Length: 144
Image 1: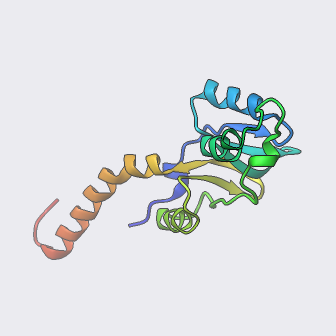
Image 2: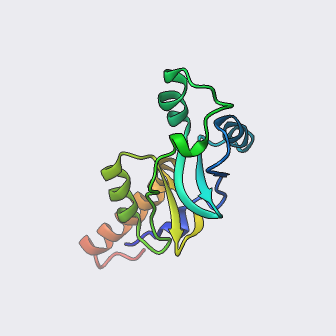
């Protein structure tokens, strides 16, 4: 049973420019009600910034959000997954890099983002289909 990223991802992605200030980026993120933004340079994805970056790399160090650029606190290079990859690939990448949000990118184009929340939201569907497959295999004479 294969679950493709493109079928589970969130298609609306928040983006900011690498030259934006943290103050500008946080306003965009708040407006979109998201705790992250994919960072673009010349329209291409180059990094990711999260509310955690703001706290750990900015506020905790006493820096001013109106003076620090996104490029100074973003995580880079960007870690991403192909839209045609399966869910297990995304989970492995997220686990390896200890991240909760994974941009879905192919050939420099952002298709969406897969988050731990997306995975949890699809978990019941996955379990139900897995149970049906196991039951079909274990009891082939039953009709479903």
